[in-house]
Length: 317
Length: 317
Image (cartoon, rainbow over all chains, first blue to last red; front, top):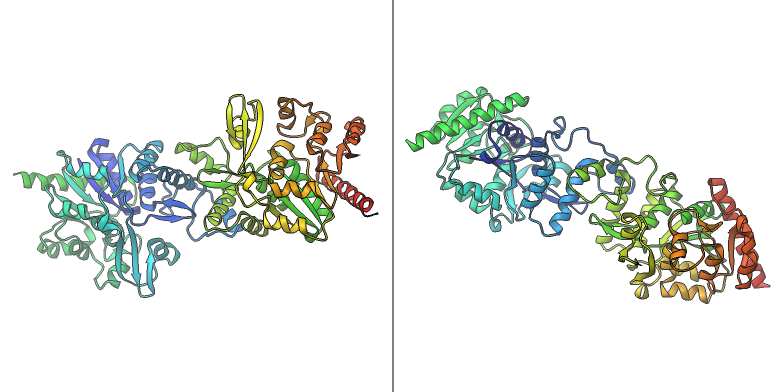
């Protein structure tokens, strides 16, 4: 049994590969909720939706969020009545947010709502929020603090980041499903998907139980670097690394996860970083990490799982 | 200056005629809010929307509610995630409810929100709720009490009505715009549009200030009968009349409004009812009342206004 920690697009892509290789019982995907926010009176969980839509096979692969073949009539009409349109919500996508919001208001947990939505969309594997408690990513920038979506969407990730806060994380507990999965005697490994370490994985690690679980791990943890050839495959990870004073590289990713991971999967183009990564006590695993298509998602998933199992065999021996 | 009281479709049609004949300053349209309800976490005001969309020229004339050329992708997606779909909300229409709900939650009054929405949709004339307070129409039926939309949409107006309650009406005050309009020294007449007397006009009259204003009126009040040839042009008015023990006819409409109106406009096909209506102390005005098209809306509006002015002249003399 494997637990995967995921953010948005990169995480969703590897998750798409993992479900091809692992059965429902063999996988639990815990998703970042630090990007969640209240907008137009609706509770929006962007990363949960990206993972859910991707696993349901209805995600829009071009824009990287939302539903394929989406229509925008609500948005157009909202603009006409003077509503806020900086965060774009498609007509179909909107149903997810309306139903989620109603159920949360009726005191269902985010875990229960996520399970319901996934089941209705035909997602077989377990997808769960990292926590049912509110954790909110706040980016402190040279122009002041910004809530995640204000930074990411409204300001197109342009302001220079000085530090990142996860408001509420210290009081948050892991979601029951994640807690169960990590406690499962059948647990073989934890996989940290190639999501933004600062914006997508850090909020998950900011939940004290989660960080402790990785620090005191009894099974290997393997991260996949989202930085390839010094660049982020998607989003502002490389830019933020630079702003925080680090060189954007898989080595910086390794340093970020030091003490929490046993292996880092990095791209062939970063092979030269194997030695310095090894010197951090982290096993470098070099393979093709860029997931251009579904086949490559499955391949990468297979490599990561093989790595996990070989590390586990070594630990057991 | 004229105040018109309106419900949904029938009211909206006459209102559409009135705006052709009267300038913005010469007309205030007060709309029933007894049908308002909370659905999917949204505040929905069906009659305000029907009037607003009709005056904006974007109403769907075929189904009688909503926006012409509407799309239903939200609704389809909501069905897929297991949401409630008995009350159909189009993708464009949804923007109205989302924006209204947000503004009400930010403590704007329903009057202010309505004014904002109308202005954004290009409606020049004043449209206002009857009240900013909550009044909820409840239909007591042989199978128990039903909230308006449960009766009207979910149960397709099928249960037999025993009596109708307007919860909250006794504590409701007229909206400031309606109060101002009725107090305006330029007020010439009040027009009761051909809406369902029991379901659309009665909730307005249930606001104590409104009933008092009509009982103590200093200007003529003219109603237009929504019953033509013993049948309702739209909706369950005739059916409810029968269930409440009355014969569906323009005479029953006259009896319902007795003491509150000076004239009743009825269709040529009901000319034979002129005498009994006159015996109630109400002046019968016979004309073509069925508004098949825009031209007939304007014609009826003109007849009603002429009647109002002739009655006013008689009062003044």
